[in-house]
Image (cartoon, rainbow, N blue to C red):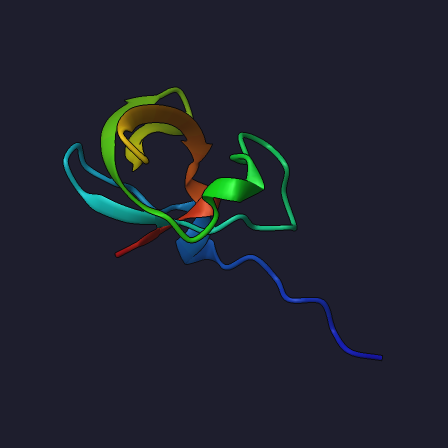
Length: 77
């Protein structure tokens, strides 16, 4: 039986600054502050930190959208 992939300490402790470019990558191991799966794989910009999550902004067509995403679902671009 294959072992389940584990969440690394680096993913849990990742810290992003405002203006930094990140990629949304929905992590199936946790559902806290997970974005809608339509936005998975999209590149966006960090706006601010809100509690344990981050507010990120991305362009969806012509509109700018803001999402609240946990750091477990983000990776550096």
